[in-house]
Image 1 (cartoon, rainbow, N blue to C red):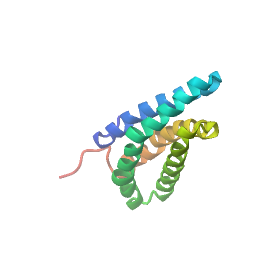
Image 2 (cartoon, helix red, strand yellow):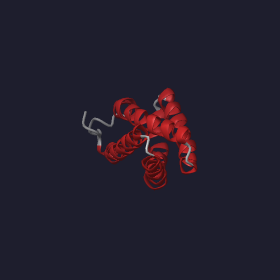
Image 3 (tube, rainbow, N blue to C red):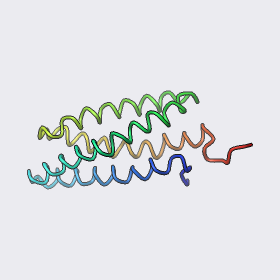
Image 4 (tube, rainbow, N blue to C red):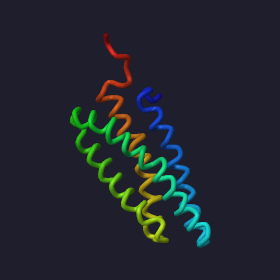
Length: 134
């Protein structure tokens, strides 16, 4: 389904998150400490500059509308995952391999959840997929 204009930028930003998760998974699989450190640093940097602000936009623009539409389970899952990703991101620069593994695993799953469920609900429940009636 083509994304409504209101969700397109957020959806495009998910591409960066998926690339980041893939980079992290490949670094972990390599077992090379240098690659792992570089991936952890890249994830931490991207979280501060792009993913964190992305979460804030979702939390202020999309989630309140979904909550009003009664989609509390989707909203709560999103908030829980955002909180966990924030916590993990804070541990990435401490060379915490467990944090990096969980961060890239959750990030990839979270993006898929948002694209397949959250944004679909936004378009359906909030009537974003249709032109507004005047």
